[in-house]
Length: 204
Image (cartoon, rainbow, N blue to C red; front, side, top):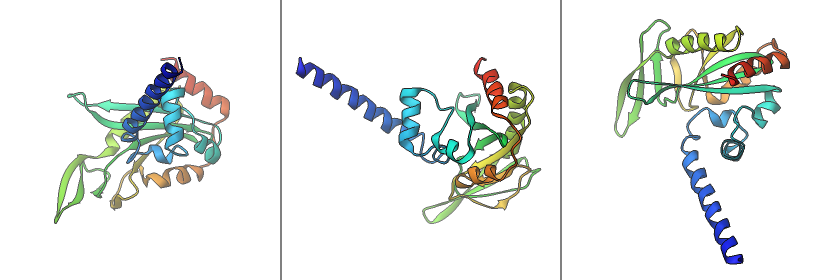
């Protein structure tokens, strides 16, 4: 009996370790480390609680809050845009997680921006859509979904990204700057307003 029990525990632990390893690839290099205290909390909430709508780190830094997640897929079924919407007493913030490392350059009205990445002994340039268009559209979508609450759009990029050559109608921030930027905004929502708006989306 003990052998069977130990074997079962071993299998469950092995499955948990495998899942933790697999999920870690979707955690690093994204906005999530800036929203959760550490990977352990993220993994626990994702795998066991199955609820990433709250974070102990954000509760400490911003107080009462809720998180929503959305992705936009292209015609081939690949994720083209990733968004995190944060509701807190300082407002509703629709954050585009633009996972692009390198130097980003572009102007507010440009249809495309240029992303330059050093590779070996050269630098390669890529053309990417101006993130403002998708962010503007998603802000409008969330505003309707949340019952008309005003939404502030933000573009978040890896801390190593060079943003000095990029200008946008939306704030361009490194991951580590997102929470401090929101902390500087004035309070405008009550806890009940946050819950009511969050429940509107959750019931859909």
